[in-house]
Image (cartoon, rainbow, N blue to C red; front, side):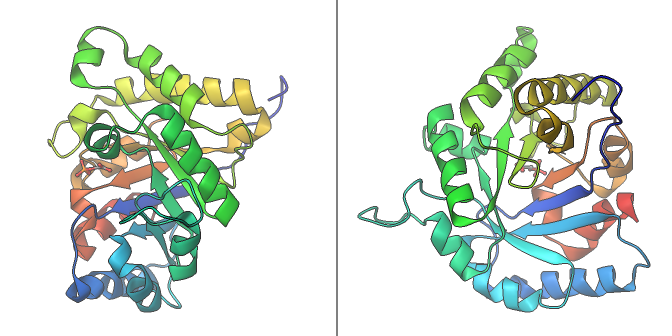
Length: 257
Ligand code: PGA
């Protein structure tokens, strides 16, 4: 961003990551959320639900006419081919997804995904016309060793595509030790990491980097959402456990209502 230019206005995104949870009956959480959103006078953020791939079409239908977008949780780098069990970005798009999460720490840990894998998946998302939500975050050990910013810098450098823009790419900062644990960094710690991410994004992508959304994720719940969402350079949340129930997820979205 050129010196003296005003920081762009960024519309926040509150995204739910259902992980490996949800059956057809869970559609009632989406209709319940849609009802709550419709009653709210003004919702000042975008809203996204990323269910397991088996539910994308169904929830897309359920979300019709509401503000809720639907996304996938992962994609293969290729558009099609002999990859048993995998799902391509094109398939997610065809099923009704507008977004896909790539590089979640659970996939990096459970499936050995490297920054290069994640970058290829982000490229696939862009090829298919999906917004890629690229996840980064340090482990507790790395944090204790004072390596947080170094680790995240490396993940950003390796995982983001050169063509990333504010429209095609969202960054999610999720400290691994805060995911599903009920523990969160302090607002000050979140501010420091998000400021460093912003600086990196601006350094690499200029104005696009200044306008890119940076989400915080890891044990976000209705009781801490307002404080975390008020931190500078936090442009929304990536929510796991508390996105499964309409009431809780709406409680988090309420930070923007
Ligand atoms: P959590 O998960 O909200 O349950 O901590 C966040 C995530 O993994 O995206």
